Length: 362
Image (cartoon, rainbow, N blue to C red; front, side, top):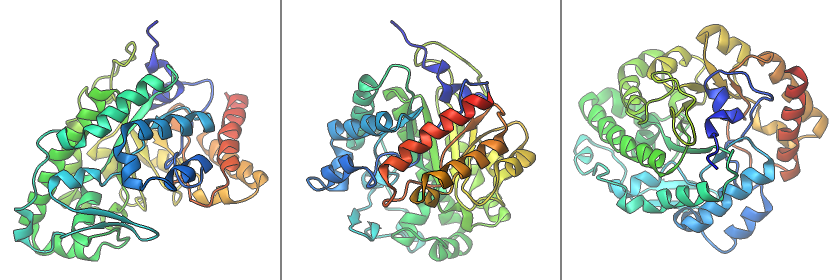
């Protein structure tokens, strides 16, 4: 029987339609806070897990079902696209990802290879296909990538950088090389995200984890056109341009546009595109809706709340649901990823609390 994934809570919320409960999923839904994941990491490295399609599918499905979430997100990483583009990539224990031979001068941009196809990344599309087959038939699967600015900052800084000093210096001192770099990344992302859609995801999320270091004018001039190009190029078209509640895996593919420290950039992010704007914990849902108007919003519990007691988790979850006030178009999530020290039972409890309290409201 053909199951209508488009009528799931998550997909309906992306279209700003009423739901019986507020849908919830968590960024870093599968990660070190889960006992099963830690067991796998004792046997395989992070990259080995990402590149084994069977293991990636297993992790994805287990996490979504263990939490009782309303969507699964494929187990992967935003930086994997950089390897076939010519960058060495290493994940150090406790130190995060390291990019070998980063971009430091305009001449370095010329050596970047645009992603020709998904041949070197077929493990990801294979994992998506296997995950889609293993998931419950009414549970949507989310694909994702880094946004152009965040990927550019990694290849310039050589690692994650909250303030992106080298990136900003390159952007201002070498604007022509900057736009060439962003174009190469954007074209590659279009191939990457569309391949995920065709492999079987029902939605995609663009992570702009470092974009909060920019001023609105910097974002408008140096970033917005490239991000917009990526989002506009996702096919099938996003819900903003082609509303649909089609059957099965048909219909529009919603795009979640997420960033951190972006309270000064919200209107510009909306203009860059996305059916859902994802926000961190530094701005309220109510304030965001006042500024963006009729938009779907994802967020935004502070991840550190999950380190505390159940009564505090419930209190803070209720505060966010009160801000949403049952308004269609709210997807409950954290303001960033689940922290490694989070008790697994607290994450499960959060999902149950959101479902319980939003059902009473609705």
